[in-house]
Length: 225
Image (cartoon, rainbow, N blue to C red; front, side, top):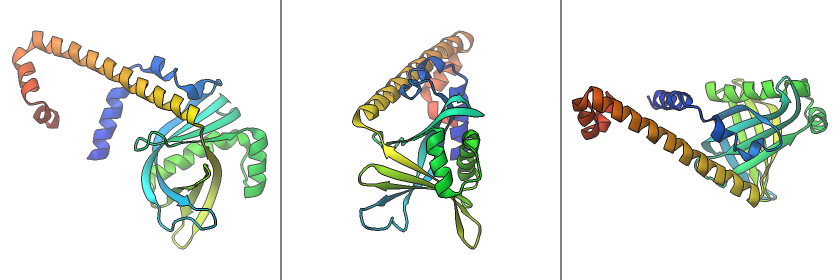
């Protein structure tokens, strides 16, 4: 029921044109475009220096934004940003060009090419959403700001590590820019929705005044219906 309600809210929000607001995103400053933007269930772990990661982490919905410079099928640069609605100061970035990918490809024995990375990332992230018992996203954070995201597949009798990505916590200045953008974005979207609500209220007042009175008296009851 909660997921259905969230989907309805997303559907309503998507019916509005917020493109002008989204274009102010500082993440797009270098010419990237957003290829993927969804909340994904992550298991968050903290690793102290000289000790292993926590056996059990906390499960949290992390907003994952994949930004591509160039075409998705032929990227020149890929940037992955992680943020959290529960902690506005949580902001990690992974930056990947072809040279960095080659090093990662060699160390992890990957059988994919750089041009396939956007598609592979989207596929893995969606798998973590749709099949959380089979595909896991484990995010291990170090005290020094370094972090690693492991995509793991559970195949009944063992866990297989599919892909690992190194992240770093962004600087205070970049975090400040992101918080400012997110605040102004929400504020602007709220203003647009409030203006739309006023338009609807004015129309209902003309067409059916008694209905408007009923909605204003019992907003929650009317919504649940």
